[in-house]
Image (cartoon, rainbow, N blue to C red; front, top):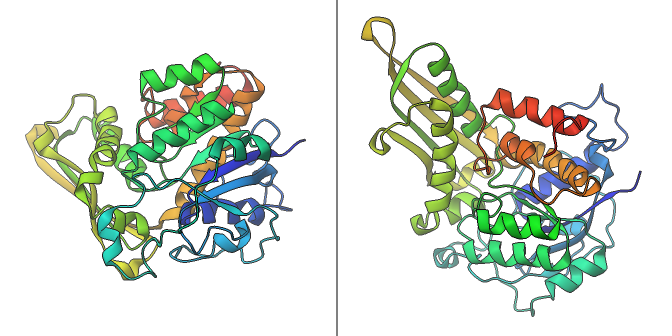
Length: 364
């Protein structure tokens, strides 16, 4: 089969984990493939994905080949696949727009972005010439203008879009209509982790509901030491992220909780944690006889590989959408791997829908 040709904007920790994974699973068989939700999607395995274009704004990555750039600072995620073949693809200079928060200039270069002085590339031209079929958006949280710019570039280039960050593109009816009109599939918004804070919180909230326990109060506090957490110290950039994470939990509770009683969102930047993310979760409720109970949980995960396990399915389902001529939102995979999809389902319903979509029994 032909490769799934993708372009990536933002060659940070998440892109590093995804690209490492593409090569990690190359040559393995399904029995050896630990850590995948699906080995085969429409005949495509993880190693059938090929990066044909890449964009970033950091001077330590721009101009480097992809295999070099994924290990350049400020990336700090776990290296689980050291042997990466030499790429012909070089990282092109992207458009900064609102992609870099002002406060990040106050931190040491090792931990923050160092903006290149090169002229931005013609994104649409590069996408067309590269043969990319799908653009994967890994921009930093709060990059509202930049996310929309690259979504428009995907439309102009006539390629699909996987939106991994919390700017509402696929879940925005106006933007979704543009992809539908063009006959281009789109998956979004805001990637979940395989086993992360949001999916764990959703699962427990759904358990409370199914077991008849009234959830009165809950919080989810997260700390980490990667550029994502450093970027999120600017609270002005967090509106869509907080909404995305909160709605993902509210969607499975049944009766919505008052805003005062639910807090879901990033908490603080701890540099020495690097790409390790800690989630502190508390849930207070009432069970039989109105008797109170509470649950506390501490979850530790490597953030970027955790998301790559979902993105690798999103890309392959997006390819199926292209092959089937579907325009607009891919509802099934979006609800399964994204925090703020166009339509929210319970996780079991989303899983069943993805299986039906892959087999061809569900349109989108």
